[in-house]
Image 1 (cartoon, one colour):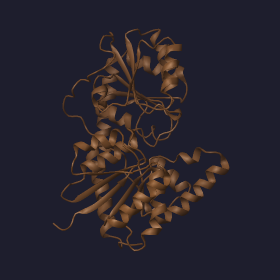
Image 2 (cartoon, one colour):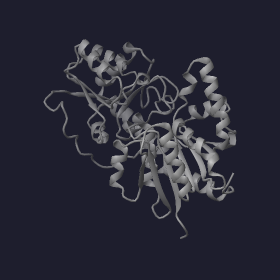
Image 3 (spheres, helix red, strand yellow):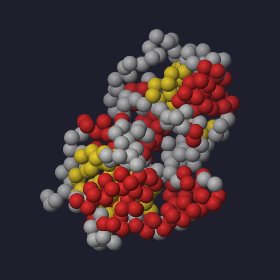
Image 4 (cartoon, helix red, strand yellow):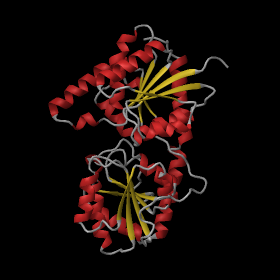
Length: 378
């Protein structure tokens, strides 16, 4: 075998989340005999710490979090090392590389950019089109944009962000659970009696709309008493959501668990998993739940619609509608057979279309294609 291919994966954050989970899975599942992987983060965090378990992956941390410090660090690293492929995750990471790329002259790696969502289209009219113009012009430097869902690829094409021949669909993938998972430890609800566990794994930020789940839980709890709600994740709205659960008098049945490294264990004891986002690229937490044969409920928005087949592997509800969500929760909570049928349907969907091995195989094919089918410099 010849020289290994060297890949630099650039992440906008080391916090736990969908994009960082995908980049972690790519880094840790590429063949070590074929690829050497560097992982860059602007600061230390849960994901960079987890990577300590994988000594073959070289973790790079910016010495400072300011824009200039990040750019200078990445520029010096790329100038001093032979990198074959840069794989940027998200618009912020891609922007850092776009700033640096013209400075690399003849030493330009292949540049792959995974777009985990196009949030700039939700900005005010003038600002949105200014940002889209910058994105469109700067994408001249990009070899390939990877879209994790059909809805993201449609946005890329509708807004003409790159030549259509340079965008590719690689759906996010998750591990298929084939064995038992250890029950979660250090949990604050071990002394509480319950029959049904509702779980949401998501950042506690405005677009995720955890508030609607709290309101719907209040409605459901009036009819179903032995039920608890687990919130996995952290974010700027945590204190507000804690206060809301107190105000709704449900705080004794709602548990905010923060960021957890044992999410599979939490999912294994869950009965229903909910994602209430205003927008999603795909909805990774629902795919993870399906891999555990769990019934899911998701807001009826692009991205989530691609994986939740309403009435088959879960339910869709009207975004922000607590009454609609409550009725779907109640339906599933009272019908174990339906939950099991939906869980199996979701599991089969993940195995067929959204498995981790399939995603890794598609990324490897893309990397090899970029290296061997195109000239090495632009």
